[in-house]
Amino acid sequence: MSIKRVSAKPVPKGKAGPAKRAADPPRLTRWPGLIEHYRRFLPVRDDTPVVTLNEGNTPLIESPELARRLGGDIKLYLKYDGVNPTGSFKDRGMTVAISKALGEGARAVICASTGNTAASAAAYAGRAGLRAFVLIPKGATALGKLSQSVMHGARVIEVIGNFDICLKMVRDLAERDPVRIRLVNSINPDRIAGQTTAAFEICDQLGDAPTYHFLPVGNAGNITAHWAGYKEYLKQGLSSRLPKMMGYQAEGSAPIVRGHPIDDPKTVATAIKIGNPASWKQATAARDESGGVIDSVTDAEILAAYRLIAAHGIFAEPASAASVAGALKYSASGGLKPGSTLVCTLTGHGLKDPDTALKNLSNTIVVEPDLDKIAAVMDPEMLLLSRRGKQ
Ligand code: F0G
Image (cartoon, rainbow, N blue to C red; front, top):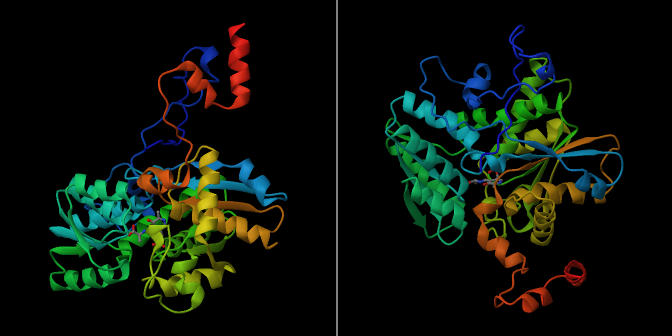
């Protein structure tokens, strides 16, 4: 899960070797993780111990197929944050939050989670030698995420209640011993600071900010962090514009769209099954300041986008597909300006949620080891080809 692109470093003059090698691509360098790379933008000191799994520097994959579907003269890129070390964007904030927690003497971390924050907290706490307590809603956490938390040695506490209840519990628990127990949900500003790096990377990879940035919205930390990151890069003169922030909630879990908390949120995209987002105000500020939109997409739209991106080689979990579903919905409404550059964030890897994948596509079939029987269940055209091959 860690396909990386590393930044190019020129070969020093006089060391280029024989002339025929001059055109060789620059040698790969080792990506140090996002704290080292973006240190000057992050709330770390020289003596902060850096707890890293070399997260960040994720691919920005152009998708001409999706761009064609959206129609018109646009460019579309998928920011595949699902290839971070634990398979989600959460590692960006977690490297900073856990480094700070360790540096400031915490002994344990705690979070509420729909699964990804828990997996990331568990992994980074393990790396740092801290204990991790994760509260997850019972029966609503994807299998991959749960197995990660277990394997990384977190104390996994399944609460009979939803994410919003878990978040309330961990806030209260962390308050009881704030010195030794650090809360690592995105209400911790170190998490948001780390997640701003996704916006920095996109500007660095594209050469500027995109025109639109589409994101799934759950607890609303990521849209908040991206907006802060884009504003910072503009302020530093490292980009020339700000994107419109386009956030998408699942229809059955869309408190921001509805304008009130949802007591019993529902969606197939369990990662964003949240009825009362902690960063609600910041998310609406990002929307309003950027001239963007926070809207909802149905589970059917999410699953259609989920299959579409997978059919083109990229496996992202259902919540991630809300960004692409949002772009499809927005373009269908005629909102997209021609000549635009779009980025859709794919927040988590598809392997996180194998159950949903297998429920949604049934193209496996069981047969005996018999050539004719296997040929019979193959595509008829392929069958024709295999017969011709025999002649
Ligand atoms: N996509 C995925 C895969 C997520 O795991 C989450 C959030 C989001 C999108 C939404 O991001 O909350 O910053 O608006 N997952 C949290 C968790 C809630 O506990 O793992 P957000």
